[in-house]
Length: 256
Image 1 (cartoon, rainbow, N blue to C red):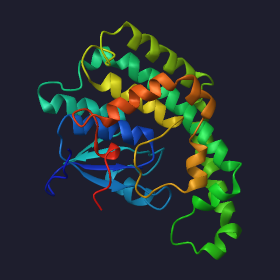
Image 2 (spheres, rainbow, N blue to C red):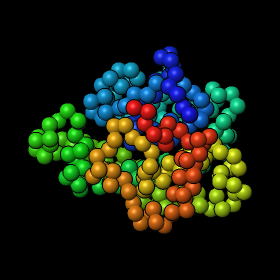
Image 3 (cartoon, one colour):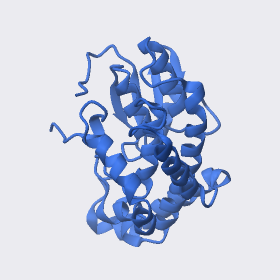
Image 4 (cartoon, rainbow, N blue to C red):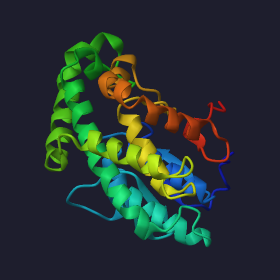
């Protein structure tokens, strides 16, 4: 079981609900890399993150891992660092894994666009997207703030949207597992399994998020049609999540 380490470790900044955060955390915990986690709050956390990254213009996004003065700016960069630092490559050969991660990245990009657009069409989800300090009595009148943020997010990542990428990634994963002699895409558990298992989080999420998503927002993450079609892969993901030697902290009950 993963345990938080003393306060001189890398600092991981992410969004608990984000599949990019999920796969990076799963990867670095698999490498037994101690870290301190900080939850990123869109808009509110951006000025502080830019200051720490020393990036005054352009797009910033999470996850980000701060290792001393070094800034690792993507899930791939983070897990590649962790895999190298661990010394025995517990995530596997990253060169062999790269094609799987490209499939995952395209699928997650489609999932993000689908979720953001579902939130835009759900008034209650927009209210849930507002910061927790906003009083309930004011949420309906301030929905425009959440709508504006969602529209900007949709525009920010629209160029990465590839319709059909989720289905393609799941079909390739299914084929890969059918050709494997066990439950692992490359013969041994590694980041190929992690990055593809996390694709299931955009159609049938099970990883714990803190703070938890509101019920209307959580429904936006589900795609029941794809979940039914790829139930075999959901069961595969669930087996990984249930295995204490293969899972990670967001697949475990809260210790609070």
